[in-house]
Amino acid sequence: MTARLTAGHVLATGAVFGLLGVAAGAFGAHALRDAVSARDLEIWKTAAHYQQLHAAVLVGVAALARQGLTRALRVAVIAFVVGIVVFAGTLDAMVLGGPRILGAITPLGGLCLMAGWAALVLHGFTLLRAASDPARL
Image 1: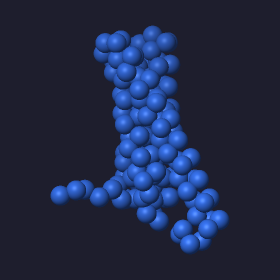
Image 2: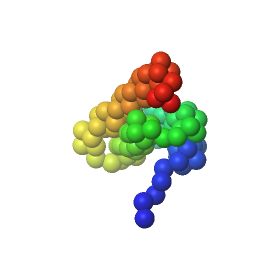
Image 3: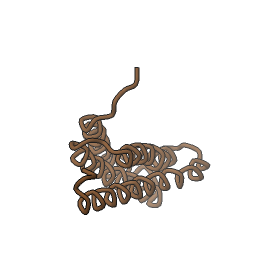
Image 4: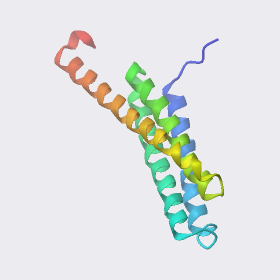
């Protein structure tokens, strides 16, 4: 049985990432402030910021997906989810004592986030093309 990705799934995923991103930001501001170096705290803040930003993007994609998830939107969702997990996850893990070699993986998460944005560009072009030719709708 194949699970079907819906706007509700995307919304819930974005909301969970947003919730966890706010919690991570608060944890960094309060619990980590005196426990890690200033550089590590900046790394933590970067992870929380990118997680929150892309969580909000997923919520926006969910709104777009109410009309149906196009291939480009599906790619965007997958890329953003993988990007958040890899980018923010590796940064958070390093700050919490994980091996610094994880920093070599972090850019792959960034590339996934960029791929998500590129997929949204493609979706936008699809909408523009459809608007100029109503038969494509």
